[in-house]
Image 1: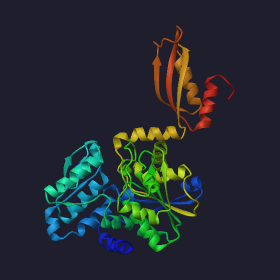
Image 2: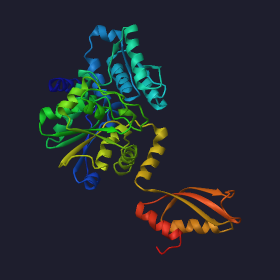
Image 3: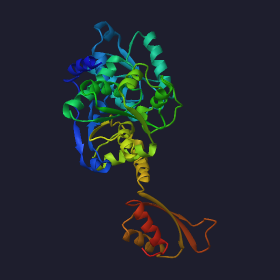
Image 4: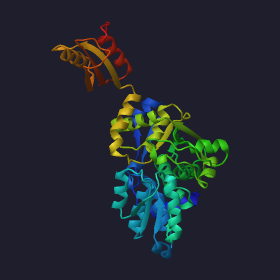
Length: 393
C-alpha cells in the first residue's frame, strides 16, 4: 500500500492543497501532550475526500472516463468526486439520500455534478448508485472501500511524517475506514513504532463492533452530529488494514464532539465538522494513550451552518457554561430590573428570559421567571445560585 500512496502523492501534489500542520499551545496545556492539528478542513471542498476521489478517477482509462462516474454520498465524498471529475473533464452523477443538508447538495452541484436523491439513508443511496452504475454503464467510485481511494487518503499520512517525523501518535476519525487505513499504512510504513488511534462516535461504532467480532459487522443506525463518520458498516478492504496497523479504536460521546467543535472555533478560530472534531473529543475524554507529540487529523470543515447554533449550545452545556434558572419574584414594577442588575453584577449574560404570569403553582401577585444564562463554568454557577438564594457569596 505504501507504494500506491507514494504514487498517489505524485498525482495529487499539483492539484490539492498541502494542508498545514499546526502546533496548539492551548490544547497542549489542556491535555498534557504536544498537540499538532492536521487541517484537512482547509482542503479543497473542505475535506480530505478529494484526495481519494482524484486519485481514483485520474487512473481511469479514456474509455472509462468517457462513460462517466457515479457514487453515493451524504456530502464530502460527493463534493470530492464532483470536484475531481470537473477537473478531469469527466461527467459525474451523485446519488444522495433525501436527508442530505441543502448546503451539501448545493455545493455538490456547484462543482458540476448531476445529483439524484434516493432513500433516507446513506446505505439506500449507495445501493441505488450501484444499480445505476450497471444500468448506465458508469464507473462506480467507492467512498472508502477501494485501494486507490485508500491510497489517496494515505497521502495525509505522508504529509504528516514529512512535517513532523518525531510524532509518536496520530489520531484519526473512522467512518468506513478509508482515511485511517491510508494514514496508518503510510505512517507505519515510515515509522513502525508510531501509534495510530481511531475515533468513532458512540452513535456509530461499527469499527469497534467489527474488531470485537473479528469481521466487518453492521450496527444500528443512530443520529449523530458526526455525520461524516456515520457509516453502518466498516469496509471489507479497510477492515484488515485497520486490524493490522491501527493500535486501538475509541468511541466518544455526542456532547464531547459538540464541545470539541466549540473549542476549535473559540480557541483556534477553526470551523470543523463533527467527524473532524471527534479526534479532539477523544483527548477531551482522556481516551488516548500516553505520547509526547500527537497529531490530530481534523478531517473536514463542512458543518451544516443551520445546525451550528445548536451544536455550539450543546458544547456550552457540556462545559457547564449554560445555566438554567426558575425564580419566583413579586409582580411589581422594578422587580425584574433589580434581578437583572444582580445578575449583571455577577458578570453573567442573560440569553433568554420568559415570564410565566399564568403559572398555576405561583401565588397571586407573584411571577415565575425562567432564565437561561451564559456563565464561566460550574464554580460561577454555584456563586450565582448562592447569591440569588440570598446566601453569602
